[in-house]
Image (tube, rainbow, N blue to C red; front, side, top):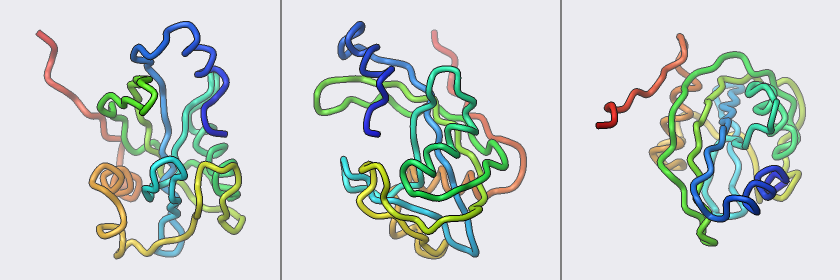
Length: 160
């Protein structure tokens, strides 16, 4: 599912102005590899990502997105990182401010395959290859998901 219906409805009301949204990143590890997909909109390799639906628990959103995008069942084990992504401006002028919640996840079952059209390919990639495959933003998300310990929170300088 490309853009959730609730976002389209909000866009009808606010136009292209910045829309605050909560996103999730599912860092799914299995046998020394991470599940990545190639996004159909920009061709980038990323972990599984998505938008939290109204009233949905964020960990449930990570699980849902993994099934919708890659056809795999996972368990969200731990919140790993909470951070604000710099404002995104899409080609149509829509602006979004995403608070991203990165979850460390365990694969339970299913062979990855593109399911809903958001990914053109999905598969397991060895941890040793990630530096060459991912941009810095996505490497940081994967590192956070693979690093044991409490969740990390980004803190920015206070506004004047």
